[in-house]
Amino acid sequence: MLLYQMHENARAWMAPLTYWSDAVAKMYTAQGSWLSGLPGAQRVAAGYDLLYRVGKDYEKPGFGIHEIEVDGVNIPVVERVALAKPFCRLLRFKRYHDQADGLSRMKDDPTVLIVAPLSGHHSTLLRDTVKTMLPDHKVYITDWTDARMVPKEAGAFHLDDYVAYIEEFIRHIGADNLHVVSVCQPTVPVLAAVSLMAARGEATPRTLTMMGGPIDARESPTAVNNLAMRRPLSWFEQNLIHTVPANYPGGGRKVYPGFLQHMGFVAMNPERHAMSHWDYYQDLVQGDEETAASHRRFYDEYNAVLDMPAEYYIDTIRTVFQDYALPRGLWRVNGERVDAGKIHDTALLTIEGELDDISGEGQTRAALKLCDNVPASRKQHITVKGAGHYGIFSGKRWRSQVYPQVRDFIAANQEAPKKPTKRVVKKKAAARKA
Image 1: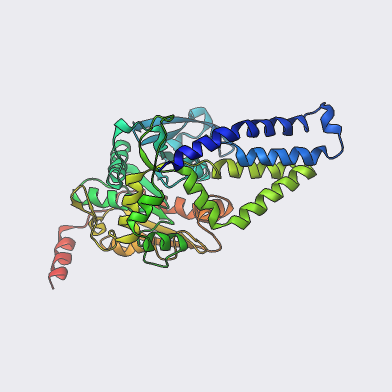
Image 2: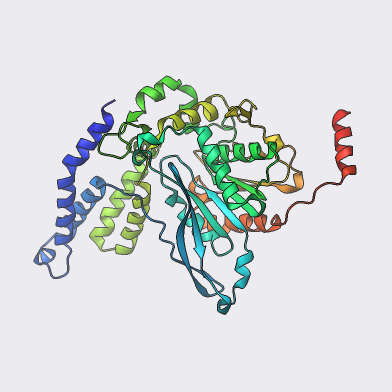
């Protein structure tokens, strides 16, 4: 259980070499430096720069969305905290426009809550998702807090708490004019939250878009699923759960450390990452700064990871990947049974990538079957050809193929569904009895 502390010690020992490598790389590339004129200077600089990139710490990046373009007009965007909780901040990206812009229609744009995963990477991984949706929507996003930064006194954070957070965020924004988009892991707790709200008779979002998530992990299990399915919970508790060192605000808290998660990400495609770093070195040697900058942008995001609360992680393994509690109708959240069949008024869109190696084919689409009281006319599914897991919410395919369909789905369901007449309700009830 001293692994986390050993990792911190290794980082401290590595820090002088890392800083020195950065300094040497700059000395051999700085304009006017006599070292930059030496034979082989470019190769020396590239080697030290790569060493710096491998050894440095990667802090949480910012969203960096300061403006968007709408109909040829640049609209300022300000990131605001709409609601702060111990383990999550609800962020809003406020767009500023006036009558002079000729864009007063934007005040009537649909409101969207993007629920980011709490599964290793920061919510900034969905930067492209947010930026693409902003010209047509008012956008909120869940910004999960690194568990090592949450004081132990704040208490534990379970999967049930995650569901409760989503319910609170929906109520805070207002469900009557809200469209929820969940990406990957949160598809499960988001569907649970909407199901529970519907069962209580609360207002639910106009639409629910679920992208690449393990609604039913029994469908087309991937390597990620198989690991969670085949190992007992005790294996995860003994091998992946560690204690946050005292030098962090969350000292003493049990977590699944980000550095272990990162090792798992890299282990899934080690050859690809090794080749990517070699290509980066070659780009620096050849002076291709544009391609090198693209590499840095990707890995600044990819290498920035957060710690997950241990209880939440173990709950997720048990509930989603071992008990399949949601599709089997066995999940209870704080004593309330989760029944997706209680959802009536929320239109559903499920999205899967043809080549997704994290959430297999059919896992997300299973939500359409579970929500059997939503009319077929208000359900839709998209399989994105040639797309992997990240391609359905980020990158060229997301912007050109997926987003237009998400935008149109939201627009088509912006109006509240018409309530059935008493005669229709009686006919349905009679049909069920028959």
